[in-house]
Image 1 (cartoon, rainbow, N blue to C red):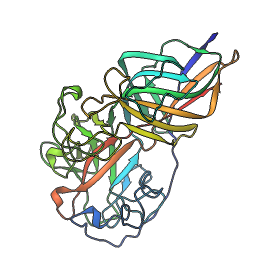
Image 2 (cartoon, rainbow, N blue to C red; image 1 turned 120 degrees about the horizontal axis):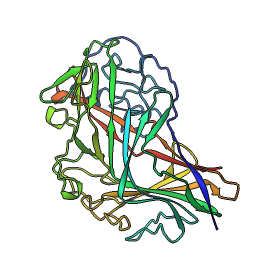
Image 3 (cartoon, rainbow, N blue to C red; image 1 turned 90 degrees about the vertical axis):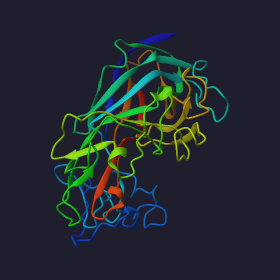
Length: 370
């Protein structure tokens, strides 16, 4: 027995206002941000701590504050100096293939294929993929266009313990970010890429492709045969541009989630880690896991080149109990922190902080029904 449920596709982007302060004793930017930052291995704060993984401090206009030593700092810990900031993107685009609710776990810790049909009911299925754009409204919410489905969905009168989405592992970000250099003598503007070195207090994404591990080289045909940008502080490798305001180069930058493990060097040279075991979700509602998939959307990826999609699974804290009285099924995408704004120095030179890319991190997904 099933019931037609009205479908509301909600997107949530929780925003917390944080205030932090820094001293204004001027310093000169080192030839490596590694020498100045206090987040990272062997530093004051570990890279995976709360002080190093969230948003950076901003002024009342939303500009990232550059501290006296020339680096941004954590929104909650004023002496946690960082080389990246996890912010809310202006626009986030993801291509979705399948979505379902399950009575048992679709994630598997081993095996060459995934099974999300035997114990799952699909609420969305499009083998060609449907691109959904999430737009930050600036008030802690976001909108989605187009709608995932046009009508209601049929779900079984049953209890679902898990949920999943299958999506492309090409995530796209279109974002511009302003910077406040008033508290530092190291520089008065951010450096970025373009045809030549660009400079300004506003930086934005351009049409370039990078990977989660910042790999070099060119992808194969499965990923568009594109040259990858490694973000090493040179113009040619940047996925950003800076100026007084955005110009006609403002476009989506693409990030490929090529592996869930360590990788370095050229594209497809490192072994792929195809599974990411269950971990906490920033939205709550359950834990999340992922598996990289091949083009049939069922076979587990064995290389970076044949991994073109990913299964995102959620083990629900509170199972979704669908009854005759259920009227709404909601999906929320959390955008907070899903753009990683990454910095280095321009060609290793003193005094110039260089923005290398706006990397797209996977969003968290929340499933609810009532």
